[in-house]
Image (cartoon, rainbow, N blue to C red; front, side):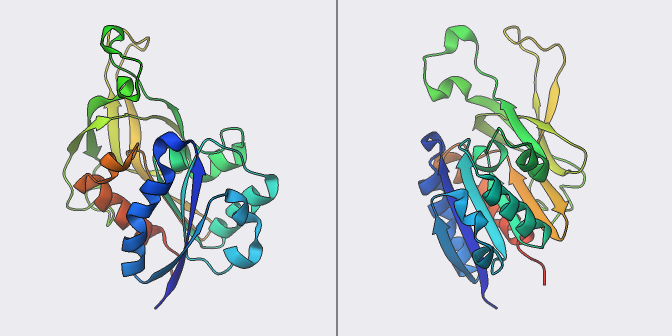
Amino acid sequence: MTRAALVVRGGWEGHQPVEATSLFVPFLEREGFTVRIEESPEVYADASIMAGLDLIVQSVTMSQITAGALAGLREAVAGGVGLAGWHGGIADSFRNESDYLQLVGGQFATHPGKAPDERVGEASDNFLAHTIELTPAGREHPITAGIDDFELETEQYWVLHDDLIDVLATTTHPVRPWHPWHRPIVSPAVWTRQWGQGRIFVASPGHDVGVLQNENVRTIIERGMLWASRMA
């Protein structure tokens, strides 16, 4: 059975939206998807395109979206189209749109950095060694089953979220002398969400292609896209 996937990419170039999404297009095609690629979220406003989709893969960090496009996205997901993405491409998109934040259920707040005397003024200032820890639900969920806790050295997302998400993995921000918080903070790192008839999948790791090529991260994202795709 052929399914239809829409890849929407753009926004801040630091997250390598073209290279990152291109990494997963061959996988989707092997899984039987026809893949359409758009460089703007305005495609969401085209009801005729959205009606024929099974899956949306979004990689648009920050940027803006029109009211019509956002309404089209929400309607499509509520009607059964899956929405999947990673890192800022889905959890830091369209910051000014509360209806988008409600749809996804988790929003990037920050990524804590290294000690001030270790910083060199580059992106690596925010690359910290941290652990992605599977939750009990995550150890049984088809997206993350069989994957053990694993280590990454990259941006560690601090995510603001609500209780409608189902958390499959978390990461803990420790207390460090140069940060103002006073107890460890646990953030969701992988989660799913039911929205109407649709499924949403989000993974917070994925700052660049190097992180996405990590075996565990890539496996989680590949499984997550399949899980989110429209159910029969």
